[in-house]
Structures are given as structure tokens and as C-alpha cells.
Length: 217
Ligand code: GTB
Image (cartoon, rainbow, N blue to C red; front, side):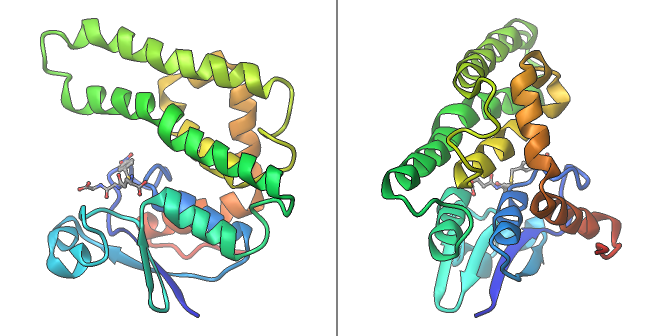
């Protein structure tokens, strides 16, 4: 069955892989599923045809036969649940991997998003310079806790899983801030994720949208 996802026609990040279609592409590459991409403009995202797929008018969406999904947590979980490669067979290990997916989205990503929002939308406010260090400290709290848990391990719970895919995707958003480098084991963890062939294919595919060059290999 053909899988089709949506992505920005022109991502504001210029192909840095920060838009959320990258994590869905990565999951599909990890499980070896081919997919098609429908690129959407900001205008098209507001129109009824896209709203029928995504009530909030965002990307990415996921279509597979009669199934339509939105929200990257749900999409990546669906891919991991349906196709082998991203969740362990053992029921308890599987539940723990899913827990890390939720932790990435519900506990680690919110302060990172709050930081991005502050930098994008609050720069001109008189209180911006005072607020940013507070927001940064909330990010550091979470990274410190995550760093302690990861320790010297390669991945969060045994073998690489959908939990790591989501956590690395979330942490990648901090790259330009320099904060990630304050936690060498987390920086190395993210680098391990980015070094995976499936991630590279996903990254190259989203970059190709921007450069117009077809990914090689
Ligand atoms: N919770 C949803 C999910 O996980 O799927 C959030 C989806 C979401 O935020 N989608 C964004 C979107 O469609 C794109 S990824 N935004 C348009 C809108 O809301 O109108 C977020 C994003 C966008 C751009 C950058 N960037 O340029 O660096 C990074 C991340």
C-alpha cells in the first residue's frame, strides 16, 4: 500500500531537517518502507483539503490506504507498531521504548519549543533578555536529567528504538543553541542517531526538496 506523507514545499529552515517530516521520513527509512511526499505551501495548509487530513493545518500528515494520521508521535508509533525494526518484541521492552517516545514529546520537547518560540516571537519584547536565561535553564534541567539517565550507554534502553528516534529528533532542534554541547554524552547520542544510514537518507531526502537535487545512493 502506498504511504504518502506531507512536508513543507519550502521549509523555513532551508533544509536543515528541523521540520517534523524528517522524523517520519527517518522512521520509514528505518523500517525500509518506501513513501511518497506531497509538498504543501503555507497557503495550501490552511485550505479545506489539507484541513481534512490535519485539523490544525500543519505538516506532516500520513496516508496509507484508508488510514490518515497526523501528529508525529502517532505517526511514528504507527510505523513502529506496523513494521518491524523500531520496537522490541519483548512486551516490557516495547512498553519502555514507547515510554521514551512519550518522554521525548511530552517532557523534553516542551522546554525546547518554549525556547524556540521565545527566540522567534519575543525578541522585540523588553523582557526578552531577562526571560531567555530562565527558559534556557528549563532546557538545561531536562538535559541534565536525560544525560544522567543515558550515562555511557549508546541508546536509552538497550537497542536503538522508536524512543531514541524521537528523542534524537527532539534534541536535534537544540543544535544551533550550543546548549547540547554542554552535555557531551547527549551530543554524542545525537551524533550516533545522525550517523545511522536511515537518518542520512531521510535528511538527504528533505534537503533535496530545498536544493531541487535528487538524493543519491
Ligand atoms: N505536534 C505536531 C506534530 O508533532 O506533528 C506539531 C506539528 C508542527 O508543529 N508542524 C509544523 C507546521 O506545520 C512544522 S514542524 N507549522 C506550520 C503551522 O503551524 O502553520 C515545526 C517546525 C517548523 C519550522 C522549523 N524550522 O524552520 O526550523 C522547525 C520546526
